[in-house]
Length: 427
Image (cartoon, rainbow, N blue to C red; front, side):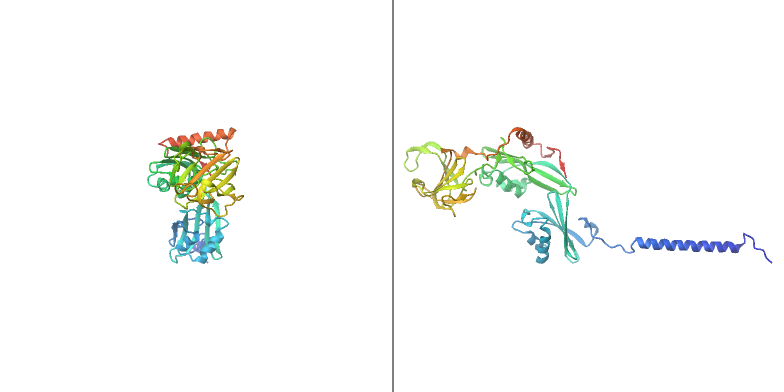
């Protein structure tokens, strides 16, 4: 009878077979575990941001808001139906005021190239991003803070054909032109008074976000040379950070009264204590400004006040007199007619139409005879430049002067373009 020795082939084969079965069982368990954690087919997932470059079906399209165009019409122009556009705008309202978007505002759309449908909308606003994604339940809107660095940039140039176009060519936006009009409205009409050869230097805040997008913030300082006159403004925020503008002496801009009471063609007579009367030739005082303009040109109040006189007044013809308080009174003569709702005792706002240019009374032709007085003393309105009533003082004035001098040096330095005036603010 044969003996079975420990090195006999049978037990060895039995052991190896058992080991092989155990190894196969291990591989089977490992395969099950692998299949439970890794999908067999990888499907494209929607991106959380605008990095859809890996998705062949999706394309990002950048659009600009055109002049006279609403956000709704922009979306419809790109192919979104009106109902979807209105639904999107309703969802955006808690985050974005569609009416406040400026001309030129950029928006991004994510388009599905297969069905040409809009899958997402994104707009960058100052320090934040607002994004809407199309879902089965409608538009889902989110917003998040946009980190960026802020620098101050000087934009220089000369007026060639037109003030507004010259600023835009130099790199500013139409919103900066409007802002400069508002800042200097009490000193001049920058659009009408500027001529070819006039110069400007404007400091604006330039912001760069994490994705390299560049936006220009509001005016930080401006220096204009219009004709032979220099005009300056410097931004200086209040305790709540709201922007305010002051002239070189620290007086608030715009000033209390407008630069002129109408859009005029020329000045025929300035403030003069002795001049020949155009009707009689006699030497007499002319304590007023005569603005020549076409018959019917609207005349506006140079400041807020109350109508004290609105009637025929001898040689003045039809005349309006406004009391602005604190002893200031303005008078408008030779009018052809009064403005709507102009009557004694009625309040008027700055810029409100109070009458129309005419030639009534003792007049050689259509023009406005404009007088301005303080405590009954007639003033030369062309050089009066009455302050707004707010003037910086003490430590606040000292801080303003430091910031002002830094900006003046930057605007005067021809080699300065984009650089750091202060430590750039990162948000």
